[in-house]
Amino acid sequence: GVYDIERDQLRDFHLERTKLLAGEGPDVLVFETIPNLMEVEVILDVLNDPGISSTNIPAWISVCCKDDESLSSGEPVDEFIRLIASRQGDTKLLVAFGINCLPPRYVEKIVRKMKQHCKLPVVVYANKGEEWDASNKCWLHETATADEEFCEMARLWRSLGANMIGGCCRTSVDTIRMLRQQLVT
Image 1 (spheres, rainbow, N blue to C red):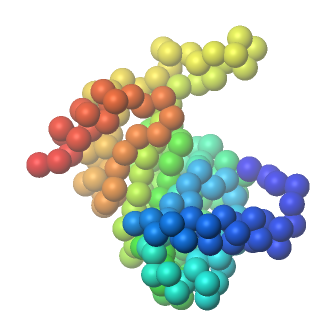
Image 2 (image 1 turned 30 degrees about the vertical axis):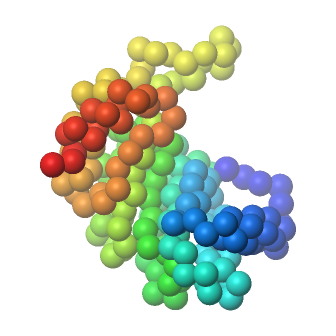
């Protein structure tokens, strides 16, 4: 979550890639798994760059969190929400914001805060919550959230106002199939 890079270098990195992607005419630009506030700020600046904003391609930003209080960088989730809320009016391409690649047990509290403090649609795609065993270099499968429980949590996220819900790392085709069956009416 902490880069050894100057803000201007990070902006140039994102601006160059965003111009290339926008030139291909995508339906949406997705900036995901963003670990820190500096990068969120840079992406917001890039979305307001005249060469990007003139494309009218909608975008969303989603951050990854290490728990229900902190981004991966350790910065408060509340600061991310405040930043998005303060910039949503002047960033016309920003159509949603969200969280991804975090254990599902952390999503509820964050979605509540997001809906309370910002009017934008909320995107959620959690991982399965498995823990990584660094010494043995493997996932601890018994720590994963079962598909049924994942889908039950997703129904709660939707009831709290999450508008787009999916799955991230370690979710499977079966997880997504079950999620679709339970959420799409």
